[in-house]
Length: 291
Length: 271
Image 1 (cartoon, each protein chain N blue to C red):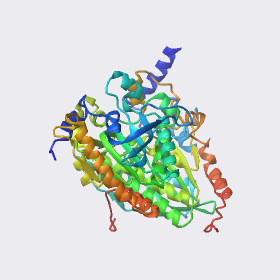
Image 2: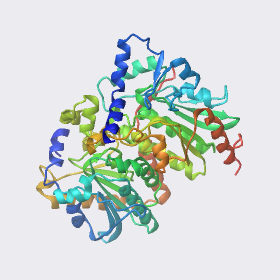
Image 3: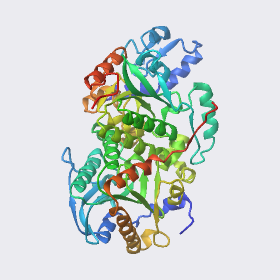
Image 4: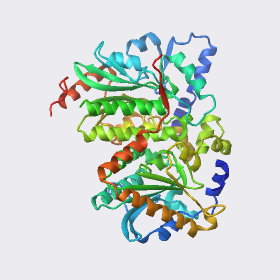
């Protein structure tokens, strides 16, 4: 039994290695999707057709911010905030500027979060979408500032906030400045909450570290996508501390639901509808809310 | 004040005679009464809280406990709190708000504990809740980093009106060890990481995170705990004086802005 458990974990950890092997066997990259949760392999076409959801285990894979917005907001309604904000290098971290320039080129993003205002089935909302393609959506100055401004805008304009969270945690290349973004964003959530406005957090793959330990966990309603990774500490760090391997479903959305930290798990193809129902129930009529 | 590197300071704060909150609390406060438990799950030995007099004023004290020997370390889990520790801290902070007592937080942790039970009980949620609630707590909060200020686990007691650091204290987004193991896949290079990370009190003063640096006894607090405690005490006196004369709205606005302004970015109009 225990050995089974170990071998399961081992397979999970060898995922990277298997990927290398795949390259060696000359299967064109991008033709297949290998699920990090159940490790089954699917044709990419099939996987993409299902909205990047594993057909075998229903793991909801990562989306870019653009893909997320496309399936979430009413077409043509998105107005982006602060789209040209870029980070400086607060602690003079070696090669940080170059790394960012390269990533901007590669991803078309300026940093790891897109914020703005949009409609969902005609209802106005502020929307925050993190994009793990940019430094694993770690939170530094830009992520912290844009999220804070989005909440402040929503507070001023009496709007709800919907945040699709995904992050490896605080951005260590920005040192203590990134840690402070946790306090800053949580403060902005506090003011939005005290103003009586609704905040829905949607945890997507992976929501971890300093983002879990700040605004992601502070939603009035917390939704998660199926099978995604949600946690505070990294799995390897915990395994190092306890000198034991952890079960496969540790820190999954389902684990968080069972332990009481997520309100519900919602499939991607129902997400827009569920968000719209929640907005409606909180009396967001599409116009500025009347007192 | 001494001009030591971060890794030299790391040696000082790891000195086995480095005073802990168990040393400082009797030197800083009168009639400290410890209060236990988060009323939800249990009591965490890594965070000690209670009420006491500070120079005649009732205050709430919330402190991260490091052990001075193995027995103490077993009780306080080497200073690494579980969620119930943060929830106890929040309970006591809300109580302080109710009775209009200032809150004094003493920060000294390598970080929030990383373990299975901590995850099950919502380590992330517990820290997040503290950040949000401390940000709007209607009473002054003064935080002092005594030794290690490790990441979110330290920040959960450091959302405050003023943050001071002991001269040799370090405060960082991730432990130097963790930093080295992520960056170079080699935890043994922690000293090198330490010197790269900008985590000393003078560094953080420049970055606008640390408001005051409290001098230690020459060579480090272990050389004269009482003298160091006196310095902490006179800092707390002045900080309370500054904060107690402010109206609550002003206090809370300033606290919000203290964190609001941290961040280094630019907005190009040409892109």
